[in-house]
Length: 117
Image: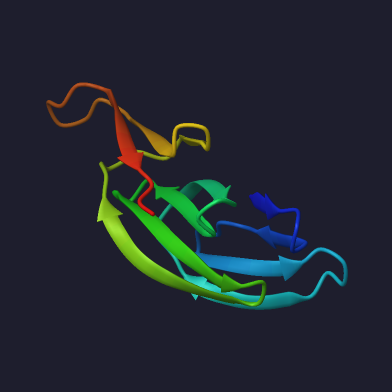
């Protein structure tokens, strides 16, 4: 889950089916639901860039753009690594970190994505 405190929006990463529902925290009403990455786990809201970053164990990171408090769009799904679920967004560095486990001969590593203006 992630929270946009200013606009009172709650974002939830859903695994089955893959989706990003958006809720109004005042009314509790679901405003929209977008297609998302598979096996969602980590979700972060980037207030400075009005974006959401979602890590998914199916091997991709979803980047969603907030047009306004009620309108969102999936901008892209970037490749990560199978099983890479755990993530952290550090706003001071504009970096989204995703932990990729050791699999199929690859060493465990941390993938780093830099937020673009």
